[in-house]
Image (tube, rainbow, N blue to C red; front, side, top):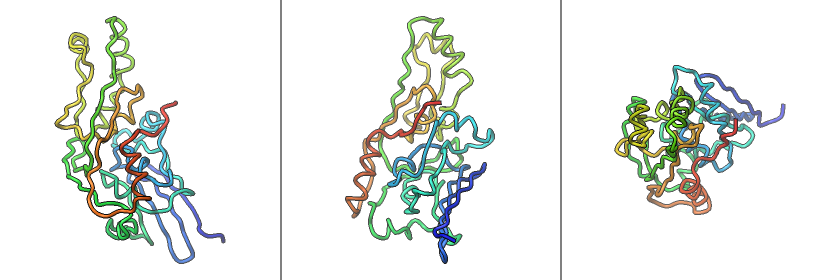
Amino acid sequence: MAFPKLSKVIDESQIKIEQKYLVKKYELILDRLKCVGCGQCSIVCPKDAILFGPAAAVYENKPKDLNAAVIDTVDEEKCVYCGTCTVFCPFDAIHVYEDGEKIKMEDLDIIKHNSLPTLNAEMVACSNLGRDAKVYWEGEIEVKFKMPEDKTEFKQIYTNKCPGDCHKCDQICPTDAIKFREMEDAWKSKILMEVDDEKCINCGACALVCPQDFYAVRWTKVKTTGAYNQIFWDPIKEKLLGQRVVFSKEE
């Protein structure tokens, strides 16, 4: 039997990949019930092993009664079980296991050997989840929807496209920060959706899941302290502060 032996299992509750050696077994498990679909794990993965998309289609196929992931797959041939995704996941949804035991954050090699700086995170209550998110960034969100000049055209958009029967963005938002105005109010005010800056944590889940590409989220700072390996950390930081939503919207 050739080693390592690779396997992958996907069901309603999790995505699990496994790398089994003669005397050791490593697993990466994504808890789909905790995942919000913000995309951080895919962005920070140094091996590009975590994939999205098309995000809207994956979201449509998730269990309807679960706030499940829009992650499409984890590539068992690329993953090196480094735990970078674990460190950066704001929702505690993805972990590395060794011989069936979850590896604690402080026991990951990338933490013990200072490959990454320490994240200065604040725990923020998420009303839509009933639990906290680990927020370690500063950022901003842009609503890119442009109100058409013709009222009939706007009514068609409102009825058939956004919000229509979609509502993916406000359903997936962990802090209930997105609200849609009623059609007449939206037309008169020229404001379709509103984002509450006091509630929004700029996680990027809305931008990832929106099939109309009406949101853009940009991080301006990642809050860190301490020593780090420049070769390992700098490319990750560049991706976090650059184009954060890295997936295909093509159906």
